[in-house]
Length: 422
Image (cartoon, rainbow, N blue to C red; front, side, top):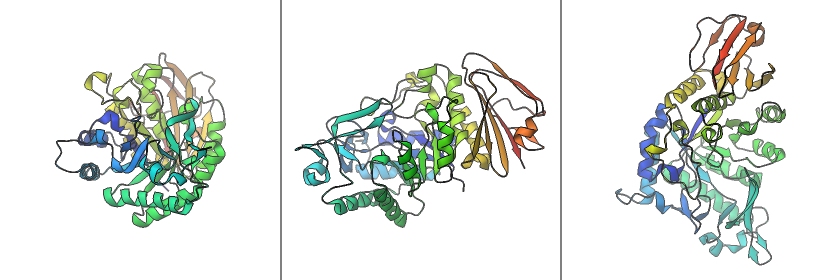
């Protein structure tokens, strides 16, 4: 089954007011994305972090346009409607693990939270920096709450509220691995009773692999991969891929809202191009955060980020991203989880991957050296791609005739895509 999810992360603080978000939609559609993901839009607590929700039923006042003729809810609904007019799905973030320490929910239902002695427990989780505890967050006890039935019902009703009120198309579920899978299954099943094609994405980054498998065997539609952290030598990424690929859709990404920027790490436009192509072609789903297409160097920050301005943009690879997404949309092999093989040509920073289904084969050749050319030679290309006709579907500089003896010098960051069909 094809699960082609091409996700643009419209980070609210970097996009401005809700009315400003609409201005991004035509460009998002132009680049070939089919879905827009918004980080939390809830009213926040005193810290101002997007991930410190104070009231799940109120919209963050920083996103409200005072000049818009309508309530905050009407502004948000208008954004969703404008996205739908362009054929874009809208994915909201759902948080069920914690609230801000000054949340109304903590005052109304203190029995729903975890405690260290007589003090409410701060929420903690693994992120890119390791184990972190946030003093501004209070952890909810979804496992052992004295009123677990009422607490779980609260989450079901919250999901139904956002589906019914705003007609959204899915949820990205924050730190999903810290929540009982039975609760997620309950939320997902009741949500699909309202909208049967609603999408649920589990945020599994930071979890151990056993938890990832548990999430994959639940009712979720997608999990994120750890492609960004793979060195292309260790086998763990492929082991995870083969365990998960028949259970759930997988989403890769070159960077996210809480990682360093690719352009910050490597400094070259070609690095942004190659990492997006690799991420888009690897799995059925791909995600790209706001500003990536313009080489914005400043990291997205849940507290400090401000609206991206023209002077923040170093370059523009929107047309390149569009071509990558057109390729992804044109071939079934890029819209599903496939067999995946790593071919070793004993050249540092040359990555050669084969994707395979019963019908299609693809060879991805990527130069991850962003300063130097790398030459590749393949003596029997047809035996690798198992097809009589091999075509070049690369995003740039397609070759008309592909010989069985394949020889090519890749420029820094270049990606070649060779395709055959049985």
